[in-house]
Length: 233
Image (cartoon, rainbow, N blue to C red; front, side, top):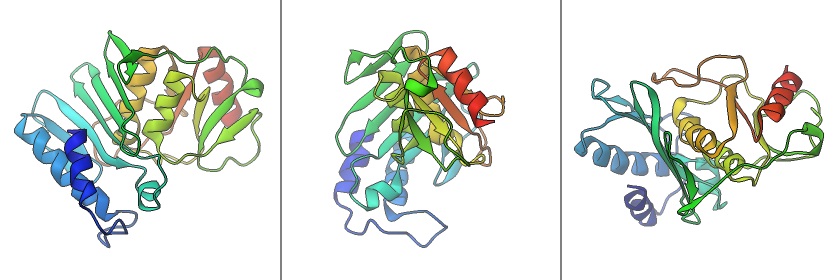
C-alpha cells in the first residue's frame, strides 16, 4: 500500500495547501484516497487523519496517516512517511511506517518484534536524560536537561528512531496535538523493539476516535522515560 501511495504522489505537481482545512495539503488528499481505497477493498476499517472513520464495525481498524510530515514533504525535506497501525480488540496488532523520501521501512507485529528494512532493531541503552539526544515536538517552556535535541517534524518516524537507537527519546511538548494515526504505528514499533512509551498525562494511548488527541512520550529505557515525564511536568 505504501508503494501505491508513493506512486500516486510521484504524479503530483502541486504539493501545496489544499485549501480544505487548516494544515491539509494536496499530498494528504491524494495519498488518502489511494490508501483508504486499498484498505477498504481488503475488508478493513480505517481511522484516517484526512477523511475520518470508515467502517468502524469491521474487526480490524487501521489507524492511517497517509502523509505524516506533510509540511516536510511540501518543502522537499526527506522526513515524511506513510504510517499504518492495525488495531484489533486487544489493541495494536501490526504496524508499518515507511519513510517515503528514502523508502526506509519500519515494521512491527505484536509479540514478534520490530524491524527496519527486514533487520531486527533495538533502542539505545540510554537511561539518563542529561546524556541523551531526544526528538522534540513543540516547544518546552525551558531547557529540560537533555544533552542534545532534534526537531524533525514527523512523529511516526521520530518514534521509530527511538525504537532503532537513532534517538534516545521522543518528547511531545504540545498539548494534545497528536491523533492516534500520528503515533500508533511508531508506538508499536517502539514497544516491540523494547522501548517504553506513555502519554504525558498518564492516559491510554490506544484511541479509536477521530477527535481523540494525546501527548506521546517515548524513552529507550523505562528509567529515561520516567525522567523525561518528570521533567516535562
